[in-house]
Each structure stands twice: as C-alpha cells, then as structure tokens.
Length: 264
Length: 352
Image (cartoon, rainbow over all chains, first blue to last red; front, top):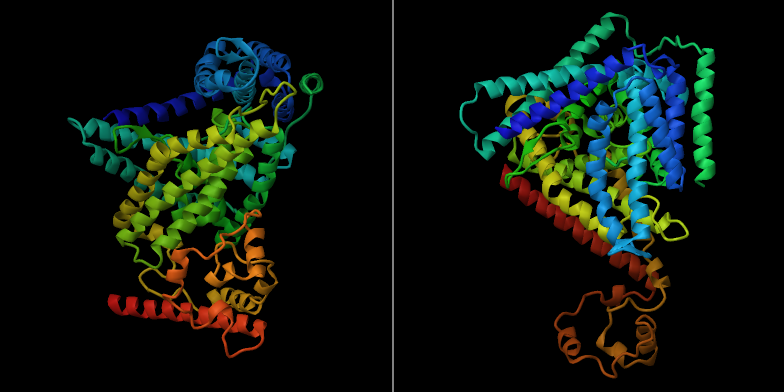
C-alpha cells in the first residue's frame, strides 16, 4: 500500500503548504505583508526577470541575499523556506547541474572539473534558487486573492483571474476529497494489494474524482446563475498606495535595474 | 518536466509566451461560445482536478511509481480547447503558488504540456478511436496511446528547448548561461525518463480512467466521440469538402514536376547509364561522382520484371507532357480513392 501512503503524503503536503502560506500572509507583523500587493507582484516579477537576464553570478547571489533579508524582515521562517524551497531545489537542480561541472568543455579547474562547468552549474542552481525564493516570498506574504487581483495590473484578462481564483478555491475541495478517498480506502484494506489492483484502485479514484468534478462544476454553475451570474465578471479593486509602497517600488526596481546593468 | 526558472533564456521564454497566447485566446473564445456561462466553473473545477491528479503517485508496471500530468484524460473528456485551458491554469497555480515550474517558464511549460500535449492527445485519441462505440476496448487502447504520445511529445519539445540553450546563449569564455546540455545529451536524457516512467504513468491513468468511465459514467466520454456507435455517419461531403478541393488543386498543379531540374536521385533507368545527358544529370545529383560505365547488372535484370502502363507519367497516346502528367495524376488518385472505397465497403459489410 505504499503508493496510497505516498499519495496521502503528497496531498497533505500540498494542503500543509497552503495553510502555512495563508497563515504567514495574514500575519501583519512582517514588513512585506503590509505592502501593496500590486507593488509586490510587479516588483518580484521585475527581480525574477532581472535574475534571468543577468550574466553575472555575483549579482544573482546579491538578489538571493535580498530575498533572504526580506524573508527575515517579513518574519518568514528561514527553516520553512529551507524545507519547502531551498532543499528540494538543491536536490533537483543540483542533480541536473552536477554532470555539467565535468562535461562542459573549457579550462581545467580541478581534476575533470572545468571552470566553465562550475560556472554554468552555478548559474543554473543560483538562478533556480533565487527565482523560487522570490516567488515563494510573494506567496508567503500576500494572500492568494490579493495576488490574483494584482495580476490585473499586468493586463491579465479578468476572466483568467476569476478562473485562477475559483481553481484555487476548489483545489482544496479536491485535495480534501482525494485525501478522504485514499484514507478511507487505506483504513478498509487489510493485507497488501497486487500491482494490477493498485493500478485499478488509482485509476478508479481518478475516475471518481473526475465525475465528482463534473457534478461539482454544474452545481457551482447553478449556484452562480441563481446569484445573478450572466457571464460577465467584475472585480472589486480596492487597493490603495501608501507612502511606504512607493518606497518598496523604488527598492524592487532599483535592485532589478542594478542587476540587469551590472550583469549585462 | 516542469521547467524551473533559470533553465531557459529570457528570449526563449518570451517566444514561448508569445507562442502560447493565441492558443489561450482561441481556447477561451471557443469554450465561451460552446458553454456560455458554464465555461468559468467547468474550467475552474477541472483545473483543480488536473492539479490534484499531478500529485497522485501511480504504481507502474515494474514496481516503480510515477506522476501523470492528466493531459490525456483532460483532452478526452473536455476536448483539446478545454484541456489547454484547464492544464494551463493548473500549471500557473503550480508555478506561482507551489514553486513547481518557473514563473518565467510558465509560457514554455504551458506550451509543452498544456498546448502541445492536449492537441497531440486529442488527435491521437480521435484517430485511433475513430467511430468505435463508447464502450469499445478500442477507446481504452486509443486513450493509452494518446496519453503516452502526448507526454513524450511534450518532453521532446522541452528537450529541444533545453538543447538549444548552450548553442545560442553562452558568454565569451564559452560558459553556457542557461541549461548547459546540448541537444545530443538533452534529448536522450529527457526522452529515456519519459519513454519509460512518465509516459507509462500517463498511459496508465488515461487508459484506466477511460475504462472506468466506460463502466461508471459513459456520458463523460461522449463530448469527444462524435459518431460513436453510428459508424460512418460523421464523415460526409461537408466535412471533407476542403480536402477534395485541395486534392483537385494538387492534380491541376502536377505539371510543376516537369520544372524540376535533373533526375530524381536513385530513380534511374538502365538506359540512363548509356546516354551522356542522363549520365551528366546523375553525376550532378550525386555530388559530382561519376556513375559506373554500365548499368548495374541487378538493375538490368530487374528493370524488365514490370513495365508500367504509363511509363514516366507520360501515356504513349499523348504528345503533350503537361496533359500526360495531369492524366497520370488523375488515374493514380482515382485508383487510390477506389481502393479505399472498396476497402471501406468490404469492412462495413464485415461489421454488419
């Protein structure tokens, strides 16, 4: 039954992260939590793009440092960041980048490792870590509904914003449903299942989830219609810029501009 | 397969965002037109479903487990346009909220998995399933192959994107600035994992879910099965009219073949080896390598086994080469169409 346990593990991991993110975003003790979501979305995006554009390892490392400092100032636990972000990325991208150290042609650095190899692996790892730290920082300091509303600044069509918001909401319903199905199945199963039975169980669960989705979507549709939904969607835009937000904007864009300039 | 930030250059990312945008726009228009007010809740719930499917650990033959993307089953239940949107939304949430896949690479990930994956899965499923009945085992096989090919096509696109990076983006010292492996490493490295584990996971989920739905909820399979159970009804004059027009145009244009300079490489007759003009043409199309002095013995022997009724697309009764070409094309096409009609007639009689 290991696959049932593993699936339960990954489903509850998803739920745990979402709860952690929501708690962290609602806490008003950190500095980034108080900043305007539009500035955070645009600012983080600018920094992520600058990291992608930069050709200088040191400047990318500086942005990583900025992300760490922002996390500390926003009371985001560095242990949580390491557990959710830094370690998984290190393992995944580290494994991918490692052979490049030895097989990239160039000047020998030490043994079979080449200078070019070490630099290219550094680029890959540092960029991946920095970008994912920035995007996680955004999620840990901003409520999802606010991030979505802020995406309108980037001219994202309103219907996509609504779909993203509703998806996020039903994601939890689906995660809970799937988790319940696997847990109830686990509690009813004695002994071990053979491989074809395991596959049948997994695919039947997906099938049930699929028909539940269909049912749910038509229920939601009826509920929306009964509340007056006629196909047009409107968002309440209630963000207000404060003096500190202009400061954040200046900081984010100054960092991004410097990274692009120095790393060109 | 979720490409993280830093693996692709900003210009590659921008190109793939630009490439994906028309598909997103078109899919949304089509879904809105088809479903009206139902599009928003349906897409939202299905995106959530796709997201959860990506978290499932699937037991695979051979004792390993793998993750599926769910693109096969989404394309089969929702059709290609709905699937493009649902998988894209799931990928966007994964990237922004869970850091799985990069923000800058959202365009690339959506292009590979949601767009290419959905279109391939749908095309393969429709092609293999044909007009088979909803409960037919043929639909399960079609779903399996559709899921497997969709994931592998997506992986192949990702591998090409990775492999192009070191070629196009490196600094003065030769250090690759993004994904470091060239095509000859990136393609096999990506494909081995996907042809085995990931492809198998998608295959198991697509086939298994279609088999389950056939028993439990066949109505969900009807959206992408027009003409199921009613064999042959889906294909009529209206739906194939553009193809017939294109065929007629091609027939008229066949004399263009005369304009081609030189002889087609390898399509030589024994007498070509003895005429100086033909010998020159053979040499010109063979990197200036002189042909042997005499026609090869094997060619001489086999050339007389079959004599075509219209040698060299020029029926002996006609003087004009153009007319000869068109007549040959008409005769050839007519024979192929007749062969297919005959085959379809025999097949339909066998089934009835």
